Image (cartoon, rainbow, N blue to C red; front, side):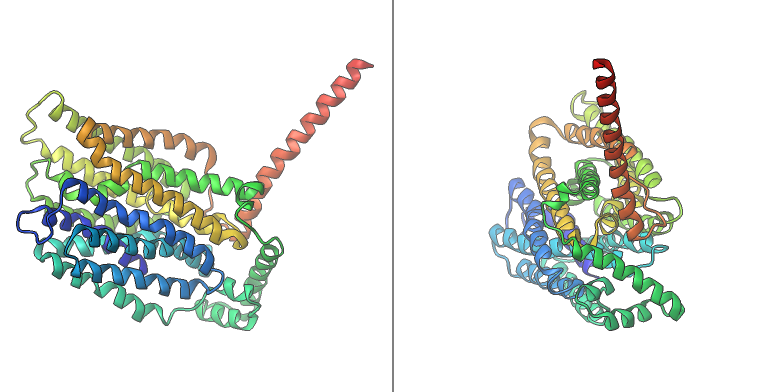
Amino acid sequence: MSMATAGSHIGWTSPSLPMLKSNSSHIRITSDDASWIASFYLLGTVPGCILAAFIVDWLGRKMSLLIAGVPLFVGFIMIIIAWNPYILYASRFISGIGQGVVYVVCPMYIGEIADKEIRGALGSLIKLMVTFGELYAHAIGPFMSYQNLAYICLLLPLMFFLTFSSMPESPYFLLMRNRQDDAMTILKRLKRRVSEDQLEIDLQEMQKTVIRDLRDRGHLGDLFNTPGNRRAIIISFGLQLILQCSGIAAIESYTQEILEEGDGALPASITVILLSLFQLIAGVGATILVDKLGRRPLLLSTTFLAGITLSIAGIFYFLKFVYKVNMTGYGWILHSSVIFYELIIALGLNPLPYMMLGELFSTNIKGAAVSSTNVMSSLLAFAVSKLYQVISDYYGVYTTFGCFACSCFAGLIFIMLIVPETKGKSLLEIQEELHCKNKKKTERKSQNRKRNEQIQISTII
């Protein structure tokens, strides 16, 4: 529910910005104001990610998520009482702090409580619940006033507080605090059908991982100094770069306005609702496919198809605004390309970068790693969301969609060369693979260096 609450803040902009721009709005805003309202939420995510890095190993995964609910709740209160754009800026920034904490802690929490057989499916629920929150706001928005929409959205953080309070703490965190008995109690609760012997084996593996991680307690510098961690941070940064540069933040913030450029059979507001519903269905499909097909096949296929759909949208805009082609009756092309883009990334490119954050890093530096990745992701999302309006106004919206498409095609190369498959592997196995690959490279370089030295010596002799 924490992710659904964050999603409702994301989805709030699509129906609300047209209301705020209308002549009947009690807060008259310009296009520039709208771009700041859309992007300040993403900027607020940055301090939220940094805060999460400090509290996640101090207060625990569960308490950190509960704390994140407070700014998400306060944000909607401020939206209700706002009387000028500056209060809306502040409300969006404060809400973003809550999202930052949630985006850091939730992948860690799921990665640590889930079995390896279902970890991918549960990890995909992260973005699925975000999509649910967006659908919630999109579905209610067209039929509600500005303030009533915010009141209805307030129900989500309240439901989160009520439901998550009874959830267990991560057994990994409990072992980090030397609370073995509590960790075993949680394991029994999470794995009710597993035998006592298997629970002991699972606990021992967790202890082995935690002991190793605490012995080699990480710092921010270890993200780049340790070979395995360096590879993990490159993978995480790269996937987030591909996702954000595909335009996800801008397209989600301006969905209704983008669709209004086409002359579809349905009003843009209704199309947005259907789009969110289809995204939710695609997200359910992702939870099934991620542990059947694997991470790499889904990333490769969805990134390629996203590039195709964005190219089609860019061509539509190019023909309409540059060559002045009469696109009346062809608005369905734009609608279809945007809808298929959202559906396609919901199957892989959108959820997997967040889900894999909980898999790629060892426990001792996971907080710093996830926070760093989300800070980078949030700054990128903020920049893309803010610059979308600027570039579209100065160079044409077809330019922005062309850039989004090129980013997807470039991302294919990165995924093919760098991203590993983590399907069906325990967290320990993933760490060993990341470190072993780098160790093999180091050994290979050492062997080549020795061989060259021997050749030089033999030449001298």
